[in-house]
Figure (tube, one colour):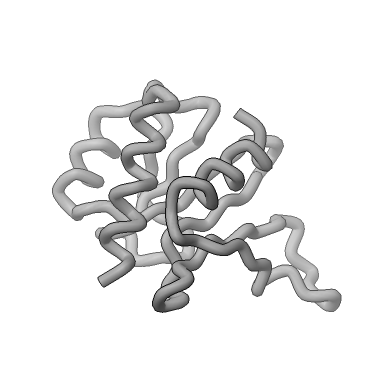
Length: 115
């Protein structure tokens, strides 16, 4: 999956909007962060980024579910710069999760962050 395809899917299937708060003109970050926030409350539901050409998405999941995924599924890791109990990174093109499974997890993140 390509970065733009993932961003477009999240936007089309949630109430999200995309923003780039960490990529200002004076930013020295090598990582381009796409942040997807809720229209309703401006809370982050997903962070999409690339490291070493690997597409990654950081999403919020139920802690027990996230723990099970990290222990049993290739390409799922504790969240980056987020609460590692609740947030999980999925290496989109390296994980053994299917595209449909990733989509369902993104929807779960959207529900959890809408509260």
